[in-house]
Length: 438
Image (cartoon, helix red, strand yellow):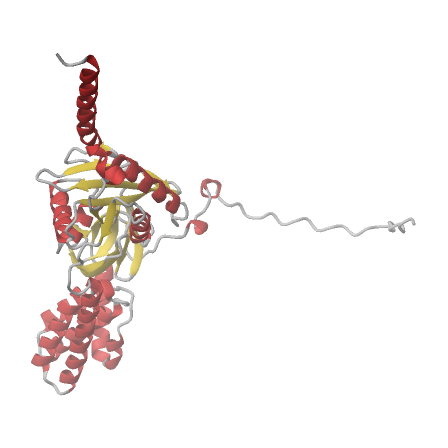
């Protein structure tokens, strides 16, 4: 028979052994939060953020990503890595190359026309016009495009193709019905033709143009005139081809040409190109959508960075504050997405550093359990979803007045009355001014 003391000692040893084995299991979910002893840190990639509206400062998404990355590097259980960037030319580089090619074709056409090689000159001009369409976002002055059409018109008239020459001249003047064409000064006959066609363009029925962008709020420029933020309904647009451009909050410059028919509405829908996983993710975020295509693009970037976690999100404007909706992506056979606490700070991000520091502390404490699980599909920002941008109107060629130039409500409601002249003052009679007393 075993002594009672030995039984107590054996029982204590069994309880201690069970407790020793149970503690690691209880602490396992906190491995990311506290950093499991001997375990390597989890790799996390901060993906480019998007802007949900045009009133978000252009540099805010990139600046927010850099500031948040800096704070996360202080979390010992995380290793912040970078996602490989897609190689290739930037859109601005392609636009500038297209603009240079267009100008070269126009100069070539001028030389060929001078040698009376009209067919070759026409081919060069048509090639140049195609390049101008590709370079619309980089075109500093729509007059270049108008002059190219005018030169094509002159070449066609030179070869007796009057109907085609008339159509080219109408295309030139549609871009600026009141603009003087330099080429018209080279010939009295061509000058009279331009004057007649101009009257026809100015008096012809016009159309409308609906301009939209994702995200909304980008300033829409039509034929060199900034008309206002998207979505925008442009009235009184001359029939013909027009050049448009805009810049999205993420910095992409987009542009092309659009054909407007008399009595009809044309439409421009501008959205950043989606050529790689990064641009596809930003485009989905800018559309205020967390969906399967977005998660697929995020997953591709996570795998390319050889990471387990990713942060993605978007900025929107709420009054005089920026709202930051942020999500944590955990890779796996069935990826998990959680919405992190929404942050808000000033548009210059002066307050953002402390907010990001506090968020890094929350991630350190709670790990992948921070935030709420997200159902897919879901909006990025509920507030932006509720406050959809309103359609505004503009008139072709008329830039909106600045707020300081707008009349007040009282001025608009009350017509100005002519000033009543003051009655002439009667001369003082028999009155003398008394001296001041000391």
